[in-house]
Length: 259
Image 1 (cartoon, rainbow, N blue to C red):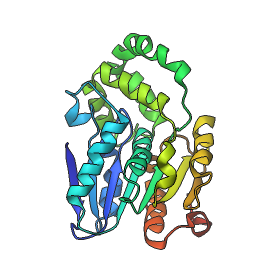
Image 2: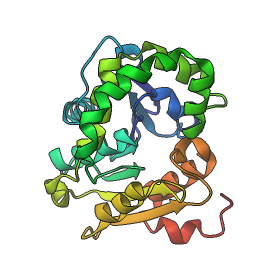
Image 3: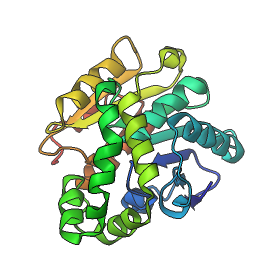
């Protein structure tokens, strides 16, 4: 597993899991901010420096991250943070290792399957994949994820490296994912976030994740769609810091903060 490691190795662990089609670089502003923590940013299967891999599995990625945490943990608290499919992997980790994680920040996760769309993924990707090399098309795609600024070069480079088979696997895993049944066994606190302009499926998923979870909390971010960590990194960092250090009730504490 390819992992970037930053900060104080004696401090609590922060593990950041990137979204599909992007890379660990999407967390650069978080790595710069959380210098007092032990930060781990792994690269998921088939992405970036692992682009020679043509498989992608939410469960297998979760198992890899659990192994990484177990190797790096020295008794300190562990906090996991994921975006999009990285957030789905966070939820899988909480299910597979219910007592390993102290808290999780789950951003823009979908836990309501849309399996009826899966048969259309392969033909659609095979038809549109050549467009990835077109910078105009790539910029339009990046803009939807708020990666059309400083991150565009890295976004474009990683897009060119990704195998179409991997992209198909990522999309199929994303659309088939449902909230793990054993998530209720997790002892972790869970903060679930989404942009107010996200698709309805994401918003419904937010509520589904926290329903029946006494340690769950929601936070909707005004003015944005899919991309809280990149679109509003300063607010994201403050919310995450408060969540980790003050034990919850982020929404109340964030009232009045400029977003």
